[in-house]
Amino acid sequence: MVRWEPDSRGRLEEAALALYGERGFDNTTVAEIAARAGLTERTFFRHFADKREVLFWGAGRLQALLVDAVAGAPASASPLDAVAAAIEAAGAFLQDRRDYSRQRQAIIAASPELRERELIKLASLASALADTLRQRGVEEPAASLTAEVAIAVFKIAFARWVEETNKKDLPHVMRDSLDELKAVTGLSR
Amino acid sequence: MVRWEPDSRGRLEEAALALYGERGFDNTTVAEIAARAGLTERTFFRHFADKREVLFWGAGRLQALLVDAVAGAPASASPLDAVAAAIEAAGAFLQDRRDYSRQRQAIIAASPELRERELIKLASLASALADTLRQRGVEEPAASLTAEVAIAVFKIAFARWVEETNKKDLPHVMRDSLDELKAVTGLSR
Image (cartoon, rainbow over all chains, first blue to last red; front, top):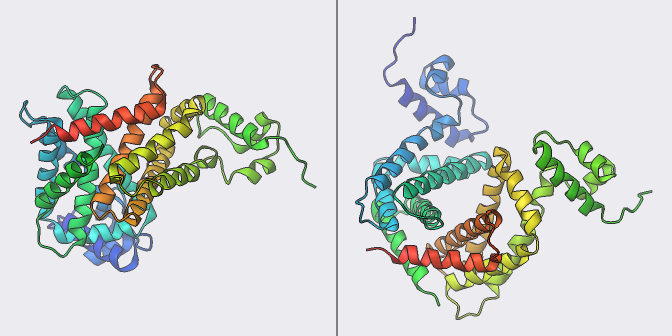
């Protein structure tokens, strides 16, 4: 019989992030996470495949959000406007998770393995965006370029928002970074 | 006494690429590479740390080339013009290695481990370019955005050049992709 634990997933996530922050990701075991959360290892593995998944399970949701926003942009929207809407939507979603995001970013920055995993996640997001743009009729290389640029803006804006002490919200930082990108690509021969 | 083998490094590289292409990277051993090249494993390890390094030793050279081109751009050049000059220089360098590049790209595409390593390599190149732009006085986030955009253009142009049967040279494809990027970022609200 499996005893039902209220919000065991949330408690495990919170315990894992606290431990990764204190001891480092590599030095934390699933047994320690479960003990900190007052749960069993068995319960941990009902929610997460491994200790890395605690930090990456949200990637699928983020990808769905980005893809839906691009697919749902008006037919008249330019490729860049479609991805701009998508990263602003992702910004609004992450805005409510600022403490979690800051904690997670510090843990990832401290581990080469996690930094690699994060790069792979971002590359998958770019790939999914490029696919969605092609489905909107955008040709290559414009689809891939727009998708890569969007993920670069997303990554850089996210890092700024997490690090900075200013009070700008993330969708706002996303827009600023995109404007900066336009300025940068416009300022040339 | 170490017997001197003329161009043993080149022979090992050629043997490794042939075997990775025939059997896949995972299914090839250093012993097999050495045997195919008519050399010993000991000789292999004098030239390469492991079988992955055969595919990635050029990354340092590519990075030096990109960084030198950005650092050496006229003071009056915009950040985008500086990185444009850098990726065209990298294009000219890789242009002479088309068969090798095509072979290498197919091997990397077939292996998740190698695709990850390639992503990490590209992220390091972007990081090095951003550092160099900051040394030129470019502020953030413009430095990081320009660097990420340059590497995105480099990656997409390289993939097109390797895949396409057209006869355009790589520096030309780099310029076209950059122009396409400017069109994409210009076509918006």
